[in-house]
Image (tube, rainbow, N blue to C red; front, side, top):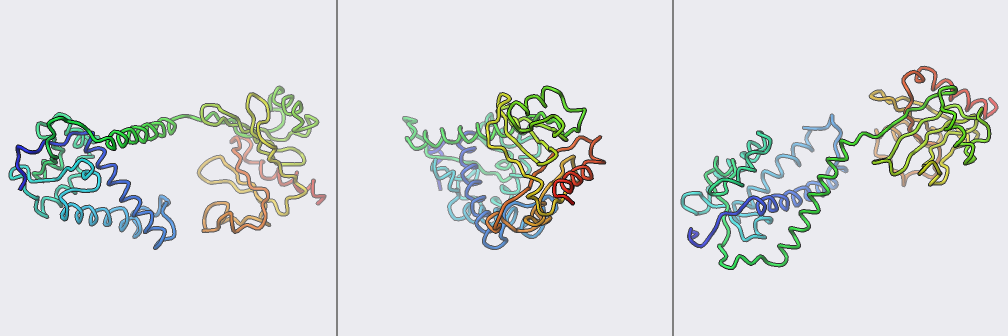
Length: 325
């Protein structure tokens, strides 16, 4: 039994760090086991709640967490702070029933926008909702000088950096990429044609059949999708100047051109079926790049809705003409 006078309640940030450590460990185990027994970790939407997802995403964390709690009254994250989970009244080790209620309470704490976790900030005993449900508290040895070990400072800096990266990822997920889908012929702006001629992407305006562009995140560079009378190209530009080598595929060197539209959006896949299979292009099998013996045309281009009806036919005609068929 722990003497109440020798301990203090663990606050929000220390508990946040502890949860993060435990989460990283569990995810690492999930990835390892999934690669060993399921050959992959990332699931498609239709695979959610299948056997792999249920076993690794729900049953494994439940069993592993309860085992660690029952054995140590703590977990790897809390051990960094010498913290333990104890009964709120007796300060003794909680019962198995309390641990189970506490784990289930994790999900309940999430429901009101995570309020159950943030409750630790202003609660007198630093209890979260799941602590209150299970009648538990998290405590650590009281320190008179409050001096924090050096490794805790390093760890906290690391956590802040991870948090900033996560925040940046969330912000970027809301960033709208400026995208101008492929348009044909007279719809192409004159200055765009002149720019391509200036950089010798095309020699004559008549060569350009389709033109589209999209910005990278925050406009660091711009990709230009181009189809001419002789080639299909995706070229990177920065400040209206080519920044990468021209990624162009001569129609004459494309063995068997296939053009397929992705049902859920305006993207078209253009690829050489002599090299790539439909299943490979659409990610429907476990075929990886290292299995390829050669590389060729494989591009994804966004086409404006008004051009989609004739796009495939027109590009196929350009390819056949270039091949002399």
